Image (cartoon, rainbow, N blue to C red; front, side, top):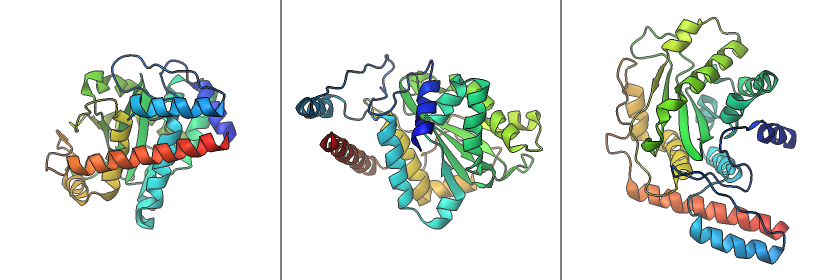
Length: 274
């Protein structure tokens, strides 16, 4: 994402506690807290050491987006064509933006060709919490077929935040995408697209951002999940996404360590440039 686009997105965030570059999204139900960044290089390293101990699991949007980019480098070309992801600030910026800024965000979204994708991942960082919206089979526009057609899944590792409160914002966003694409489908069709809130593994601490990255990782690499998604008919609910035992706590723990390692390396590289 270029610098002008970053400036535009950060400037359009009004009410959500989205923490931009080098600041973190808290993952508890309480409000997020941030601290000033020291200016001296030595102070940066001291502060970084303290953050490593007290802020494990909290991801800023910059690290989050860099990690998704890294995930994308390790998938085959077929999946790169079939899948897409939105920048972690696009959804929130759209919800809080003026009409003029909304049109710019939808223009960027249009370039992703969502209606030719099997899965599109929409990270949501709002109210100090990460969740993941997955647009499934938007390349299929026939809701009358019980096995095909589009559906939406909202995955939240902290259900106490009540993910259903995002319903109206999600549907506004989807309507905007349809209108920008000048699709022939009616508003009635858009409202028929199922939005589901399947149960997913729940976080113990403040690692909601890592859970979102892990969910994306599972969509990209888990054969068990791919089979569940492929066989799920449109008239069947996703009561629980990992009900078949495809969630492996040990695998998640290794993934968490990898994200933390990635985070530390990136943070150290930035400090060394100061």
